[in-house]
Every structure is written in structure tokens, then in C-alpha cells.
Picture (tube, rainbow, N blue to C red):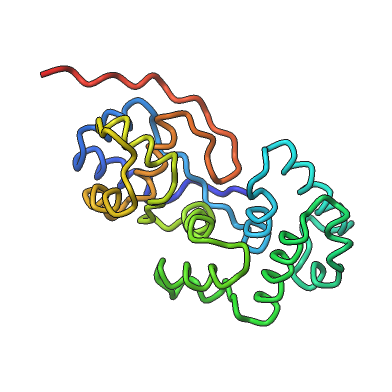
Length: 226
């Protein structure tokens, strides 16, 4: 369930607007930062695995059938998931790989290899290193978890095509920036690169990676020619 918007929203908007005139124009068109940290942990990561490489409608249907395997709870615990066999998980539409991935995630949590209660003591990179140990969770998924579930303010998903395309368009680049070039470009946005990425997504009306619906952005004014 979503909570209030992140506490750094106003500071990020002021900082980014001062640091980058192009991003300032985007921010003026989009409006207030709308990131709402989600409290889910196991549920968020399991959902991310289920949704990988699937269209929204198909993914939602499989996700619904998966949750229905566990009547009486809003979402199953890791132990409840591990009590199901791979064939039982596959029966709701999961591929064999995804069924194994979700069980691996559940086992990591059950065995204490992935302990969400320790994350507040860890850096972003340390958390990413822990998350990618789980089969089926890559760096992008870990970065989305940091941004939308942990509320970390300075995450830059440099491999995200939406962010790359937005930067290419707004900063008049001939081609999408690679990871190295994008990270260098984003240095000006520290310590609020999460907010910068969100504004870039919204500037192209991209469906947000947190699974929530998005308001439609206002029309962003074009830069005046000098």
C-alpha cells in the first residue's frame, strides 16, 4: 500500500531546477514529484519477477492467480510459497524459470540471506549486491526496489531505456547515451538522481516502473532558440 510522498520531494525539485535548466523546464511542466514509497518487500520483488517480459494484462492475470493460490492472506509469506511445488506454481501460468526464481527469493528470505530489516544500515550498492544474488533479480529490478520501495533518493537506473531515450530527446543527443555517458551526465543531479529519473520518465509519459498509474503530464514547453 502506498504511503505519503517521499520526504525529499520539495528539496529535490528545488535542487534539480537550479542545477539543470533543461530539467527545470521538465519539472515545471510535470509538476510535483509523485513518488510514493511502497511498504512491500517480498511482495514487490515477487511481483517484479512475475511481470518480467510480459504484457500488463497477461502479467496481472498470472499475478492474480498466483495470489489466489493462498486464500485468506493478502499476499503469501516466503514459507507459504516454499510449501508449494514448482508444478503448483506453474499451474497458475508461471514459467518453470519464474517458479524457481520466486522459490529462490523465498528461500533467501527464509534463510536470512536476504534480510530487509538490515537494509537501513546498507548503502544502495550493498543492497543491490544482496538482491542480485537471487535468481531472476537483476540490477534494474534492484534499482526500482530502491527507488519505489525503500525511498532512496539518489538512484540512477542508467540501463533503463526510458531514461536513456528521455535524455537523448531533451539534451539533443544523436543516440541514446550508454551507461558510462549517462552516469557522467547525471552527476549534476546528485543527490536526487531518483527524482531526476522520475521526471525523465514522466516527460515522455512512460508508464512508471512502480506498477502504479500515472497522471498525465502537462505539456512541456519547448526551449526558446537563442
